[in-house]
Length: 113
Length: 112
Image (cartoon, rainbow over all chains, first blue to last red; front, top):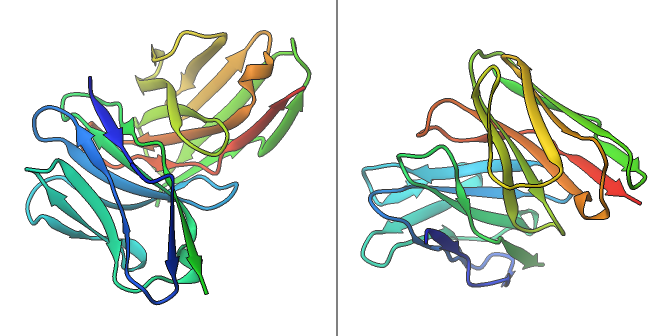
């Protein structure tokens, strides 16, 4: 069965430190990969996506993600965390043959000053 | 540029009452449209999606239904709400299978 795993329910990082939010997937073929962020009581905002090409993808707000096909991972990273990065982060994957996204359960990122 | 609207922003309804949530996209034509529900501020569950007027695909059997009466309008309905229908309802749009989905601001529904 196709699935997306975000193994950490919550990640705590000190402001200024690098952050990583993990995502692994189980989808056949060459899936499309996405990261979204959600602030409290708001809709989801698109951060970045990988379709093809360079494994390191840069997105909004200084975030980047690295696609690793052998490990079927797409971890979200940022070199220096800001308190304003505190939010809920979702990884999503799409089988190219389908319209539907397969979503991870979300990771709550808390950046402490 | 494209904009997606949802209303109402917040809704409190009694059990057994009907429901109608509306989603409208501006600045584009023939988008794919999606309804999601998010429970307890976590995972998203795809409820319905539509690739054209009158075309609705249902992902989860339940007491909700969706309609697309116009190209850029997507409506989520229920004849009788259940307590379990409480949640945060999100509408999204995109073009084609490859493109990113963009989300509306959401409607928070509380069924009492």
